[in-house]
Image (cartoon, rainbow, N blue to C red):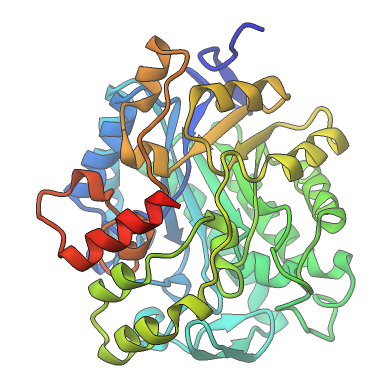
Length: 407
């Protein structure tokens, strides 16, 4: 079967030159929540490497939506810098999108400026922090913040937005029965749990108009007992399409409950703790990390079995596959299974020019060893592949990486 990989694909008003998208994996390249030259250079390198679209990750729609002090906060003062980034990507022939979202309960007051908010009050052990359930009167204003983010993205020169409705962040916290214990019209039944998502999407689609493509990253499963499962998630997907989404990115996992369900493999605990600044957190992770962040075995295209269920249930929907793609052979298999495009993150961190190489080599495979060193360090400093570091790693970290990559 002839490969679809390098054929154009259209989502709403946007046509991509091929079917590859750099997924919105958190770069941690925005100290003081502001884009840097490093962020620009990275996305330009991926665009020059042949990708159809690159996606700037995890831009908070409000200050209260920040999880990290190196996370992008989409606000008017940074538009000129973002315009430089989008121009650099466009000059390389690729489209550029930006993921917009709100972390909900995944933050601390010293980062987001307020007591973290969520669908329901409680204590988030993963952060750890006390959490305040949102009043229903606050929800329309929060939904408008997403619409405002779309307008800012347009001013910055982005071609698309990706609404983050998965991974246990704010929209996902409303959707999941695990985090939504509300007794009002925003809790209980799936219909009620979707109401906040509905509000957000109405504002997003209104702001997007006819010239911005809208993607939504959503969970197929939350990845643990008591979370969202496929039957409900298919209903969520149907609703998102009814609300006008131009493409659905099929993911899974909950960063506060099942983080490695999202990324697979093991978290390199020694590497993660090595870069941490907070002494008590550093030693806590070193001592208890392997129990706090249990491993989930990695296999190539690890979400494909679930994604095919969505493909069967939604035969005409614009669906984008993400999760564990590292070879052209598997990418071709996914596209030939009926998916409209594929997203990759770690493969393009390991090799920004991977898409161009796939044009030349039918058996092309990136050299990512799945140690997840890049993820372990991104919570403190910029995301980077250990194979491309200028500095030499301490021997203890190198031993950890070698051990994990032999598994």
